[in-house]
Length: 261
Length: 217
Image (cartoon, rainbow over all chains, first blue to last red; front, side):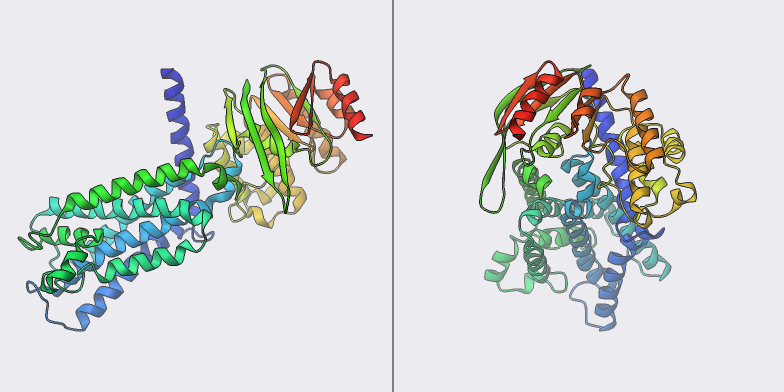
């Protein structure tokens, strides 16, 4: 029993390793810089949005550094949107590999999740490096909070993406709905404004948005007491774990259909 | 060994419901090669995919404790944008084979020359088949699945395929779908006839052939 379990684990590792390599090579066509594009795309999106908001020269609602305020709002959105979207495409883009009996749907999903975590980490590092070179002080007062907040944000994006990739195979319309949900979350996340300045009845709805908590939690690493009273990091963790569970259950339930389509 | 437990499999065509296996249980033993026969549309290829595990039954369980190949010569899982070499490396990695050995074997067997480093999508269909066939032979499967195609290429290359396959047959089993009675008789120990959602097992291939001939009348 134990030996077969160890063998199964070794098999899983081999399959995932091979899938990750293949995914890196083929996602953006056959180019050596495929993975560079995977990192550069969200990074460009992030820098462009940040650049526009900083260039507009708006007075920041909090603190003195507008790069920090807008940066801590836009970055979680990007680090949730991109992993989510890429996860969503996982099965669709890697379908032919399922023709190898040894490759299972779950391998494809997990391989891409690992790859998305690596990609997100690269985006984060590149973003910080660029700001450092540009001479912007982007270091948080409490780095451990910042790291935890970003990790949970990526986890949330991956969990939503996992559920989405199963739904997508069954309902191709899902792409549009997914994007709408993401936009709604973005607008109500408080990335560009202070949610506490909203009327309390609006805030009552905003607290249901997981992205709001991702951003607020990250901001507490920079601003003491940010979103005090409404911030609940545990809520994002709960939503993510529940969504992951739902995604895995959905995969199991419709595995036969996923293989057929 | 491959075990089917109360397996039910159907698929829908335009208007009708086609039942391939109607709650069937059976066992395919290690060390035995099986020939599966049945008239067109009986669901032989679906049965093959169930055995391989690339398709799932509607109900019931399929348990395998040996490594089953994909249908021999089948190239569907190979990526057109990756080179032949990269495709071989991928499959070798997935099946935990010595990567260099696998590449060298296929390179030598499929006679692709410099094309080994060209994208798979640019290959002629003959080259694609040769690579796919070589790849099946480069992995040590316990059981090879053969869906009609036993050899590819020109007659000289087909002979190579058969020679290589005969070598392989000493340690591996095979499950073969064929309309060719001679091939089944040459390679298989036992026969199975698939008809109307049921499977008929025969200890001798000739008995299976006899039933198959009846069905065809």
